[in-house]
Length: 255
Ligand SMILES: Nc1ncnc2c1ncn2[C@@H]1O[C@H](COP(=O)(O)OP(=O)(O)OP(=O)(O)O)[C@@H](O)[C@H]1O
Ligand SMILES: [Mg+2]
Image (cartoon, rainbow, N blue to C red; front, top):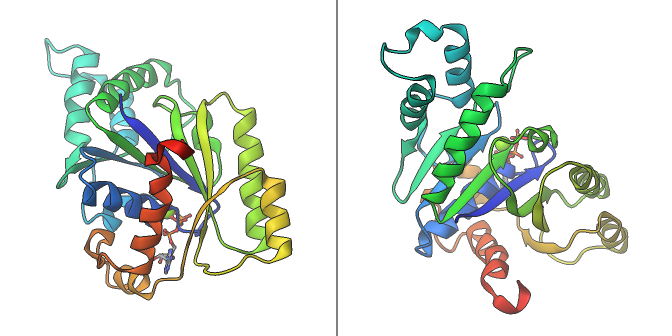
């Protein structure tokens, strides 16, 4: 059974960067194979991992609904979907990537979604870790096609307003029918002490701070050059900080 880590937070806070850094840390420490799931319709995780695909699950779902005639004679719908889904999985070094693509339209997707859930559940089993980069907001969690989440990390900047948004995500997700085993808050682009108002906001959010990731010029330089997070130096401050965040999963005393 794989360990599922999902990354959430409001727009532009660093979800994709954190998800890619988590994958990087898992690979560096030999915790593979990893399945990277880009669940943001505006897909970017592939770019951060230098492993892009044009095949998305959303497109596949539309194709099958729009033109069931394309299913080869003698092949069942489930079998065909299975075959196309395998084509949607891009292989990287130590990890695979699937891209969910855009979300559903107004049609009935129940049957296709149940086939997808079945496929993704089986896919999960092949991997030691599954890391999901989510779109901003929480809607995605209410229509998840995969199983429960072992750890949901909410990313926020250090502003009081940003932290309040993180609190809202926490409250909203708690009211949804999703089983999230552990929660953590990661404060991105901030180093050093937290002020009293910041701490008060964090307490209100009911979230435990799993770590702070400092502003890292190498991360920005890589993003500007379209380079992968996987190529950042091992001693880059953001890489070191995320390694620290993940230590919490592996320390039995804190589990
Ligand atoms: N710790 C950091 N140091 C420097 N730059 C960072 C850091 N974290 C993120 N960035 C930069 O900030 C920008 C936004 O980050 P990212 O794309 O990861 O955010 P996001 O939450 O996934 O955004 P979206 O909501 O659009 O999906 C990127 O250019 C990224 O390189
Ligand atoms: Mg993103």
